[in-house]
Amino acid sequence: MDPVTEKREYRDDYDDKTLYIPGPTEVRDDVIEAMAEPMFGHRMDRMTDLYTTIVEDTKTFLGTDNEVVILTASGTEFWEASTLNLVDENILVPTCGSFSERHANVAERLGKDVDRLEYEWGEAVKPEDIREHLESTDKQYDVVATVMNESSTGVRNPIEEIGDVVAEYPDTYFVVDAVSALGGDHVDIDEHGIDVIFASTQKAFAMPPGLAVCVVSDDAYDREVEKGDSSWYGGFRRTIDYYDRKGQTHSTPAIPIMLAYRKQMKHMLDEGHRARDERHREMMAYVHDWADEHFAMFPEEGYESQTVACIENTQGIDVAATIEEVSAEYDMAFSNGYGSQLGEETFRIGHMGEHTVESVKELTDAIEDVADL
Ligand SMILES: Cc1ncc(COP(=O)(O)O)c(C=O)c1O
Image 1 (cartoon, rainbow, N blue to C red):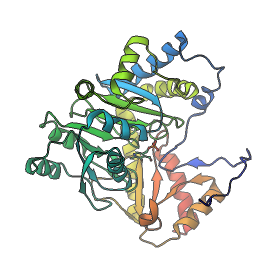
Image 2 (cartoon, rainbow, N blue to C red; image 1 turned 60 degrees about the horizontal axis):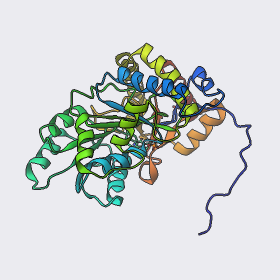
Image 3 (cartoon, rainbow, N blue to C red; image 1 turned 180 degrees about the vertical axis):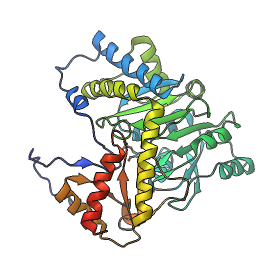
Image 4 (cartoon, rainbow, N blue to C red; image 1 turned 90 degrees about the horizontal axis):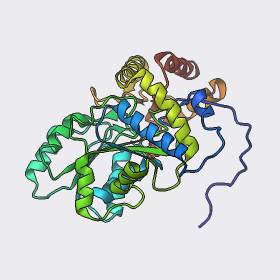
C-alpha cells in the first residue's frame, strides 16, 4: 500500500493553541505539572493510594454507588468491552451521527446482530421510538446502546428518559457512550437504569488523553458473570475484582496520566457536578445566542449539546480558511463539521472542561473578526 501521509520529524517548536475542538481540550497547568514525577511501580503501595483515590473520587463526583473502572485506553475501548461483556446476540443502536454509527459498526465487527434505529444527522433519539421498537419486536435485545452527546452533530440525546424506558425491560442492559459529555453535563446515573456509561479523559474531564472511565452497575457485572465470556482487557469482572482485591489495575497503567487525573478530579470535586453542569449550560446558552445572531444551530431545537456546539454555516463562510486564519492570528483552534458530510456545512466549538463564557467569547470574537461577521 502506498503511504498517503509523508512521515515527518516532530520539531518541538510549535505554537501553543487554545483548544476549542471537541477534545482534547484545555488542561490546567497544575494538572499538566502533576505528570512530571519520578516513575513508580504499578504494584507498589503508592499505586494503590493513587488508583483508589481516583476511583473513589470519581464515584463521589458523579454521585454514583455503581462501580468505577479507569483504564489506560481511550473511550473506544468501552464500545468494544461493553459489547463483549454484555451482548450474546442482539444489540439495538439508535444512530444519529458518526459516533453512534461507529458504535454500531464495532458491535457488527464483533459478530453481533445489530439493529439500528436510524435518525437524520442533527436529530435526537426519542425515548418513544425506543419504546415503540422494543414493544413491537420479537427480538430479545441484550443491550440498547445510545450516545449521550453525538459529537459529530452537537446533539444531546435524552438518555435519562431513554434509560427509564429500557429499565422496563429487565433483561436488556442500557449502555451509554458519554465520551464527550460526562463531567460537563450532569447525569444521574443510578436513577435512570444506566448499566454502563463511559467517557474519555480528554473531553469534559479536561485531562490529558489516555484514560477511559466507565461506570458499571451491579446488574451489568452480574450479567457478564452469567454470560461467561467477556473482553479480557475491559472485562467488568476482571477490572472490578482486581480493584476490590488489590486496589490497582490488572495491567500496567499510564501512571503519569493517573497523577494528572488525581489533581484534576480534586478541582472537579471542589467545583461539584452540579456547578460544572451549570457552567457548561451557560456556555451553551452563550454560543446558542451567538449562533442565532450570525448563523443557526445545527441540532434539532431543544437537543443542543452542553459541551460541543455544532453550528450551521448559513452564511457560507469558508470554514477551512476561517479555522486556519483564527489559528494563525489568534492561536485558537476550533473544528470544521464532521467528515465529508458536514465538513463545510457546519463548524464545531468544543466548550467543555475548564472553558468559561469569557474564554468562549474570545473565540467567537476571533471568528467574527476573521470571517467579517
Ligand atoms: C461521542 C464519542 N464517542 C466515542 C469517541 C471515541 O473516543 P476516543 O477517541 O477517546 O476513543 C468520541 C471521540 O471523539 C466521541 O466523541
